[in-house]
Length: 231
Image: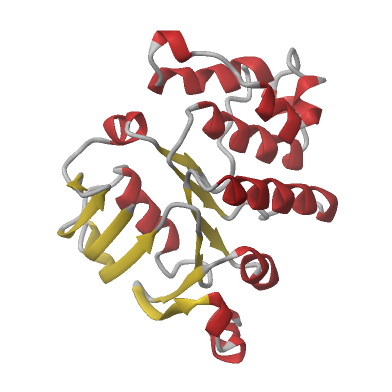
C-alpha cells in the first residue's frame, strides 16, 4: 500500500536520511527499529509529509504523494501517532478525539463504539482534560484520536516510551486486533525489541540514517538486530 523509495532528507546542511527504502502492506505490521537519533522519526516525517524530502519518492496505493502536504495525506488515510503523544492538554478527552474529525466528511464525523471498546478507560474520562491523564492514558488517547480518522495506514512512533507495563500489554492487544482486521497497514517505530518482534511481520533496522538490515520477522537474526539497538 505504501512504498518509500530512496528517501534523502536534510535538516539544513545535516543529512538525516540517505537512500532509505520502506514498504508497508495492508494487513501487516512493519517495524522500524533502531537507537535514538538514527532517523526513525525523520522517516515518519517524510512519509506523513511533515518534512519535505530532498530526493526519492513516497507512493501510496500506486499514487505518488511525495509533494502532497501533510493535511492532504491525512485525508487520504495516513494517520500518525507521534512520539511523545502530543495530545491537546487543555482540551477534554472527547475534544481531543473529535479533533480527528478534521480529515472526515461531515456525515462520517462520529466516534465509533469500537474505539471505546478498545480503550474503555477513555469512556470514563470524556470530560477530563488531556493534561490531567497519566502518560499511559495519554498514549491510549493519542492512538484513539488517530483511529477516529478511519485510517488506512496507522503509524505509531514509539508507543511504549515511558509507559507502564500494564498499559503496554493493553496497547499490544489493540495493535494485534487492528492487524487482524486486515484493513489497514501499520508501521510501528520501536526501540523495545521484544514488543516489536512479537507484533511485527516485516522489519527494518536503521542506523545513522540508513537501513542496515531488513526482512521478514520470521527469518530475523535476532542477535544481529539487537546489536544495532545496544547503546
